[in-house]
Length: 289
Image (tube, rainbow, N blue to C red; front, side, top):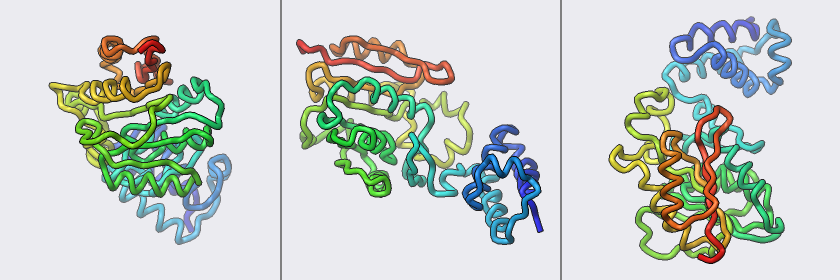
C-alpha cells in the first residue's frame, strides 16, 4: 500500500526536468487534493496517510500526462479563478492570477449601483472575467465576445456552472461586419492576445505546446493590433466617463499608454501586477467626448 509521501517522491523524480521543486510540490498537492478530497494542510501534516489503489492509479496516470508538459488544469478539466470553479480545455487559455488582479481593479472602480450598468468583455475565452464580474455585480448587464465557437461553448458551460447570466457573442474584434447588439457600456475589459514570437522563446512548453495560439500570439510586426482595434471600438462604444481596462504585455506598457492617449482617452493609468511587471491599464473616455 502506497502512502502520500510516495506520491510526492514519484512526482519530484518524474517532473524534475520540467518544474522547480516548489512548483512540483504545488502540483502534487493539487493532484492529491483533487483525487482524495483531503485538504492540502492535512496532506502535508500526514504524509504517511495511506492511499487507495484507485487513487494510486489515478496519480500515476496524471504524472504520465504531466511529464508530456500538459498543464494540470487541462488534465483535471477545471481550475479556480477569483474564488469560482471554471471548466478549462485546450480551446481556452488557463486563467492566470494576474487576471484576477485586473478583475479586482474593475470591481474597485465600479461607481454605479450594483443593480445597474453594462459591461463588455472582449476575448472572453473561458468566460472567467465576465462571469466573475457578473457574480460580484449581479445587477450589471454583462456581455462577452470571442472569435472561437469552441471557447464560447466552454464559457457558456461556465456561466451555467456558476449560475450567472452572461450574453455571449461570437465575433472577431478585428473584423466586425455589423454592429454588436449591446448598449453602450460603462466598462469594457479585455485580455487580448499579446505574446510575440520573441516572447514565445522564453515561455514554458506547457503553455506554447498546449494552450490555444489564437488566444496567445500576435505577429512581431504589429504586436499592438488588438489594442488598436479595441481602443477604437471602445472609444465609440463606451458611455461618457466609461472605463476601458486592458491586460497587457509587460514590454509594451508605455506604447499602449501613448496609444490610448492618442486615441482620446483620459486619465490613463498603468499598473504593475503582483510580480512587479507592467501588466494592466485603465483609461477613461472623457465626459466631453
